[in-house]
Amino acid sequence: MTTPQQGRIFISYRRADSKFAAGRIYDRLAAHFGEEAIFMDVEAIDAGLDFVKVLEDAVQSCDVLVALIGRQWLHLKDERGKRRLDNPEDFVRIEIAAALNRDIRVIPALVDGTDMPRSTELPENLKPLARRNALQVNHRSFNADANRLVAHLESALKAAEESKIIKSP
Image 1: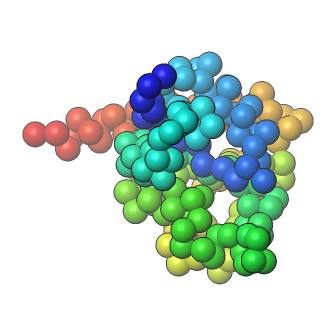
Image 2 (image 1 turned 135 degrees about the vertical axis):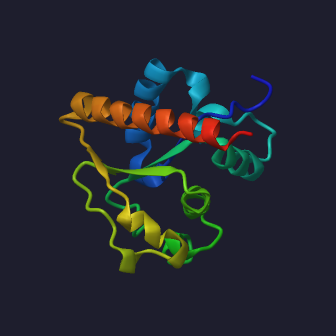
């Protein structure tokens, strides 16, 4: 691959929190929608490319963002002991905030029983995430949970396509 594939579905996740769940979900979504329709940083950014620009472009071109939220997502700290989510330059924060600002479908996928973050726990630009209806994705029920996610994504992609048709002159 010489240029990054811009997917219609963007998978946002923290490697230190949910990389294995992200990999399983990527595989399931790629099998269903095709690899070219899914953006996940590990799979879609070639060596030598400006990964910040690639991430920004991918979020701007996606129709749906799946935000994988594991048990450490909210509380992970950087090397200075500060919560990553409080850093305006945190990539996960940037990805989700950009999708929320575009008013596209953002689906929180709560990994292995993680609770949905409360609005009061989120930075200002992520507070709308707390109002998004979430799905559970659990190891024990992965197949059923992944099928449910696929169904929601099919619906979201159909709505996005219809919205594009209505908006086009």
